[in-house]
Structure formats: structure tokens, C-alpha cells
Length: 81
Image 1 (tube, rainbow, N blue to C red):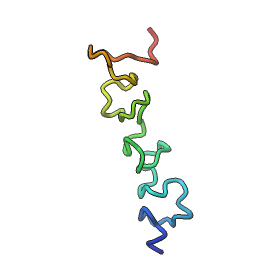
Image 2 (cartoon, rainbow, N blue to C red):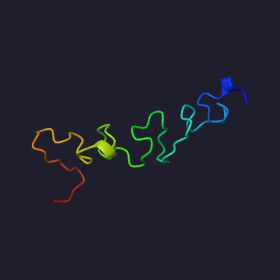
Image 3 (spheres, one colour):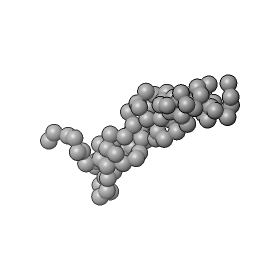
Image 4 (tube, one colour):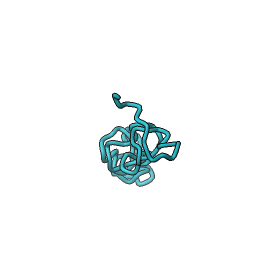
């Protein structure tokens, strides 16, 4: 194995490591987001509201503005009222 041809040291040559060439775990949580760019590399449920905060740490997982009015109540874009 040529270490100069294996960027992420996962024992897959760079030319064959097409899915995640910079992620040595090759998307360990199987969410189709490589670990080197995944905000939650060990959690397949990443960011439902698109606010770039991992679901595990998002106080308002369905509110992209994260209770912008500071009332501590989350807005829900996907809820049925």
C-alpha cells in the first residue's frame, strides 16, 4: 500500500475511495454525509431544520431560527396545529 495514495489512512487507495476520500471511517453513521463534513458524524439524524446544529445539540430541532424571539418556545415548521 502506498501511504501517499491513501489520504485518510483507511487502507483504500485514493482512486478507489470515491465515497469519502477524506473520512477514514467512510461515513460510520451511514447517513450519506462523510464524517469529515458531517456535523454529527456518529448520528444518522443530523439536521432536520437546516440550521447547521446537530439534532443531538439542537434545542429546537424543527425550528431553523431556534426560538428567535427568546420566548423559549420553538416554532415548528412541520407540525400540524
